[in-house]
Amino acid sequence: MITKIKIFISTLLVVLYFLVSNTSFAQECNAVPFMKTGSTLEYTMYNRKGKKEGTTTHETLSVSGENNNLSAVIKATLTNEKNQETFSTQYNANCDNGLFSLDMLRFFNFDKLSEHNKNNLSLKIDADVLEFPVGMKTGDHLNDGTISIKVNSDAFTLVTMTFKVFNRQIVGEEQITTPAGSFLCQKVTFDFESKFGIINIKGTGKEWYYKDAVVVRSESYNRKGKLLDYHELSEIR
Image (cartoon, rainbow, N blue to C red; front, top):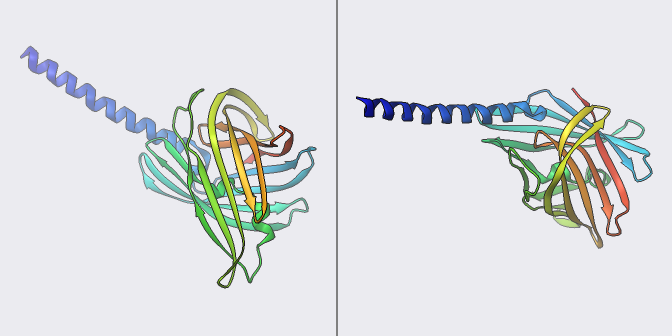
């Protein structure tokens, strides 16, 4: 009888463990703002001198799935310093058991796409996803990612743009304050390489993530370590 009780208790503990784990994962997915339909994250972009150059609004159009597996469709809209809309696109975000993944399009320079936003042109996009595991900690290495965008006119490719990030690593935890509030974030550093036709740019970047997935601030530097530009979270709705 005692042995049977012990087996029952052990089995019960295992079941409770998985129930609690699944609930935890679900809470992680639901806790992130962009995994809620109708939520909006607004970012303000600045040049290296701190002059405002425009804003990007990320609005969650829909969320599908259940429990610990959710997928979101997000619309990104770029406006210039005169508050004029210049470009918009959509990308996907996913959360699977606490592992967040975002299309590389989310991290592309929308200004470059805006330049080619014309009626007679089409964009062919081939992109990886960047992953953000739950419970990221200092010293962790994150996956690399590449996106390639071809600007086509009919069947002819006018220009190919690529952007690659690599050597992504969590280097610490910092408190970041922006107009949207104060956030305890994981700090991530990375290297990048971008090509726009014959122009090749290499540099480094720093990003701060809240709840393992929400970008709070992002900074880009050239190969000499000089700041190129940055953007930060300015509003959450």
